[in-house]
Image 1 (cartoon, rainbow over the protein chains, first blue to last red):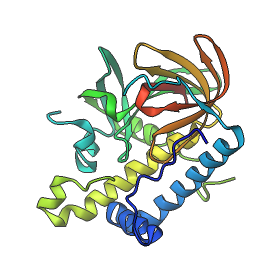
Image 2 (cartoon, each protein chain N blue to C red; image 1 turned 90 degrees about the vertical axis):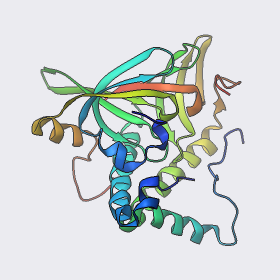
Image 3 (cartoon, rainbow over the protein chains, first blue to last red; image 1 turned 180 degrees about the horizontal axis):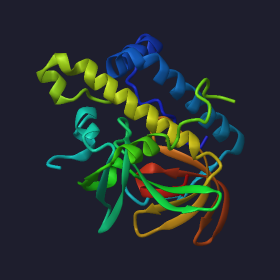
Image 4 (cartoon, rainbow over the protein chains, first blue to last red; image 1 turned 180 degrees about the vertical axis):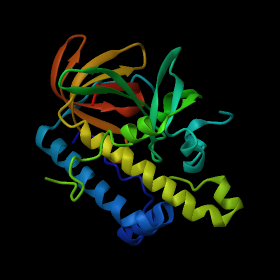
Length: 64
Length: 101
Length: 94
């Protein structure tokens, strides 16, 4: 695949739980709502990239 | 704005929301608009400009300035109540009960 | 990835206020991204590059935009990914 995965979180024993805890710290009582919105959007992005196999433009980044 | 825009944080960004702002970004690029929101992940600003009223409704143009490119943000004026309501309704779904069709 | 602000390190009582502010800002931004689907977007990029494309999707970290019918200076690319780091700003009609 040519696109970059969004997995920027550092590795941990239980990535799902870690992400949940981090979201809770950032968004407090609204964490579940934001997490749900983000999950749907990321899934949509991943599916479109799988389906269309888009290539980066420009090939070389303009800004390094 | 004294320090790096992406480092300000939600409480500071909130002070610019619902204000008309002037944003300098990239090399000598300047934009104006009503600040709808600042993405807390990328620090990107969403600016809305309401066009003239036209037949068949009002149009709005939206500019999003990436947080990493922001050099300066300046408040020009505060929104009145009507503008605030209109601004904050910009991307709300027409029906409030669900996100997905 | 996102640090809590220095304000909250200094005063823990501000934390719920900051969390609420972050949620409101984030939700509003995500709704803006959602509204862009299938719209024509003009991208202003570094090196004075300006291109137009139909927006499809963004990853949630705002690193990449997936677009269709990207009008590059040398022709149309049917499907493309734009690096958000290359972008200064973009505009569209709501």
